[in-house]
Every structure is written in C-alpha cells, then in structure tokens.
Length: 508
Image: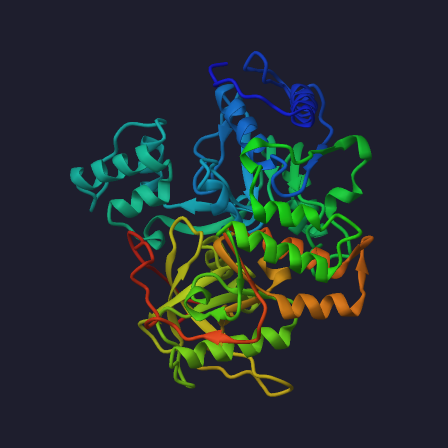
C-alpha cells in the first residue's frame, strides 16, 4: 500500500486488526490490497465506539482509504452504473445530511442512509452521460446538450465525482434526468455508519438487509434516539464485536472543549464544579467563552442548544423580535428545521424526491424566500450536496403554553418545518457547528431534577452532547438574555447551488 505511515494508538491498532480480520472474512485483504470472494454468507456487524476525540473519524477515514486502494468501489447514492460480477462495494453513511457533510469536509465521501436505501432512476438518455462520466461508455450525443455543456459536466465530475452535480453544471435540473426513486433491490458489500448512536431499530434492521459487513462508529456518551426503547443499537451487539477507543491523541491535547467533555466522566464533578471549570477554561483560552447573553446573529446559522422545549420557544420568539420579523411572514435568512413530510400514500414518489434532496426529519434549512406558487418556499438545505430546493411547505412557529402554533403560510400538504433558531440538545445530535451556544440555565434545571440515565446524571449527558457539537468555540450562556443583532438577516453567505430544483408536493 502507498498510504503514508501513521501511528495508531494501541486501541486503534487493535480495532484496525479486528476490522481487517472481519474484512478478510468478507474477501477483502487490506494488507495486500486483494479482493477475493467472501468466505461466508453470514452478516457481520461490528462497532467502534469512543468518546469525542478518541479517533473514530480518523480510523474511519483510514479504513476508507485502504479499501479504496484495494479496489473497492465507493457508492455515493447518486448513481451506481452497471453491475460487475467482480465488483466489491463500500458505502459510508450518516443519519443526516449535516452529519454526512461533516465527513465530506474531512475528505470522506459520505452520504445519508436514505440515499442508500432508495436509489435514483435515470432517464435512459442521461444514463448514457452518467456512464460516460464514470468511464463505462463512449462520449454520447444528447439532443439539447452541446459539446460545451458536456465538457462542463466532465470537468465537474473530475473534481467532485458526483453525477447529479455534473449534470447540473451542464445546465440540467434534477427533474430532467431523474425520473423517480426505488427501494434498493440488490445488496452492497460493506457499510460504514457514522453517528450510529442516532440509529433506531428500524434503520438498523434495514441496513443489515443491505450490508453483509456493517461497521458502526458511535459515541456511547451520546443521548439515545428519542423514538428508541432507551438504548443504542451497538449496545445490543456481543461484547467481542464492540471495539472501544480511548482519547489519547496529540491533536486533541490542549483542546479545552474536549477537556471539559471528558471531565464530565468524573463522578465527583457536580454542576457547580463543572461551571467553575468552564470559567477557568475561559480565562486562558478563547475557544471557551462564558457569555452573559445569547447572540442573535449566531442563531441564524448555529441554533442555541437548550434542554426544555419552553426555553426553545421563548428564544425563537426573542430571535424573531430582535430581527423585526413580522408576525405573518418569514424573513429571508430565517433558519428552519424539517419536522417531516405530510403527504398521502399516493404521493409516495414525491416523498422520496423530497427525502432524496435532504428534506428528512431533523434537516436544517434556511428560508430563501417564497416560491413560484402560494405555499411554496425556496430553501437552502444545510449540508446537502445540492442544497437549493423549492418545495410546498407547511411552516409552524410554536407558541408558549397550549396556544396553537402560528402558521405564517402553508401549502395543503408538503414538507413541514419548525423554526430553527433554537433546538433541543436531542435534535442537535449528529451535527457540528463552528461556534455553539449552550443555554446553561437549562442544564442547571436538569441537574436540580436529579434524573439518571444509563448510570449517568442526565445533566451530564446533555452537557456532553451539547458542548461536543462545537468545532472551534463553545459559548456557555449563563443568563436569560438575548443580544441585539448587528445587522439584518442575510442569505448572501450561503453558497449558491448550480440550479434550484422546484419539487411539487401536489399534483397541480
């Protein structure tokens, strides 16, 4: 192998050896970069677990590179091409677009679980273009596509290896070349699943049907999925199939956010002691800030993380008031959270279209303005590879108490959204932001309750999840105040997509 030398910790080296052994049983020899037929038809599931900073992502990236060098095809979910008998496949998955984009930003070609469960059906003419781009066919002649357009598509594919992005560079919309979506019929070989603490039992069973070899990467200190029975799927595996990593890496040394996260494991640390640690860290390192108020400017792109729903609703209304948002409409630049898709069964294809574009429950989007028809919105899907989309929308802004939610506008059916200026810590799992604001009064309230989950005080689990969402700066907000914004909401900071795909949720 031509990979540069890297020094693993003892636990990483042990995890690598165990994963390599499992892959050898599936016919992939990482030591010699050889592919052979699988030695067994049985399903193999393993998990690599560890807290933040333990090196899970680095190990995942190295395994991906080794499999790629061995000749394994990486499946992106946007187009797969013709099947080959000798082909071995790998898909790298995450539960949400935001989690997948975190991996993509680190050079790992991740996609969402949904994009692997459902595959696109291409128009036969444009399938020829996809085959040519992937080196499986001759340069095609397509009516309506000039040589210049094909050259643009080729250059785009050379850079990002995405067929939809290449076709968009040629001036096409998704509805021009994708005619629908279908449930995957043929299995793949290997699946890597990051942020597997977010998986529910149904997703886990679906993945086991597709991948004979499944490797889960997860953090046991995260919160379990809201809809689960209380645990994480990797906790159901036999102990010998769970590989634990410890945090010992030089690149994490001196990171005050990770130091605070790991301090929570000390049973002697109560809320008051932890807050003193935050204050001490803030005195010596600008990556930790004890803030007297929530910053409204930051909430437009990085939601304030809270525990209580009532706090979330109050902060959302304070955010809208600070920016002068009218009560009967949204301002361009307001953040939203997808809360699901309200479509009858007969519109199943449209549901798949929306989900394929990243509008799955929990997706973060930014409102860009009204669509071409009443009830439609132009949206920017955070973390999506093709982020700009127009869709029939139902937007709900919740009120305090038992008052019915305010709906500034709505189609009869379509994608539903809640406001996203503040979110619960549960919903923040799997996401990361450059700067994260954590509303400490809510954490204090959780500590006063004395609740314990999985042997750990609830406030510690909440705090761990919240502060590890921060990539570069943690703002520990200690007072119930909101700072005035420095300017109006904006959308010019969002990277423009090549084209905007108008997805209808109604037959009109």
